[in-house]
Image 1 (tube, helix red, strand yellow):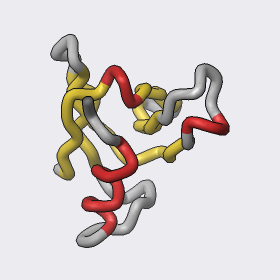
Image 2 (cartoon, one colour):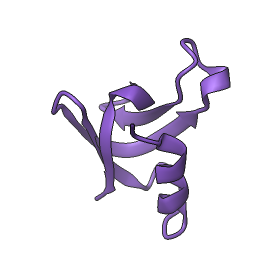
Image 3 (cartoon, helix red, strand yellow):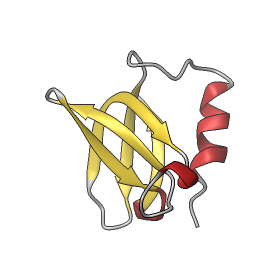
Image 4 (cartoon, one colour):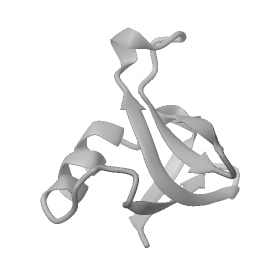
Length: 75
């Protein structure tokens, strides 16, 4: 299972998590979303209680839940 928190911690070792960071998120169904990092929501603050990441795309945020993510890459 993909671990969003561990992945973001690894990325933070070499990059700042801000809106200048461009990411490529690949979902388990093969959908690819690219764009600036928009934010992270921990599981306890989310409904349903699953952590998520937000990618900004064309002026709005796309929220992707941890259980839907296959991989995240910095681009």
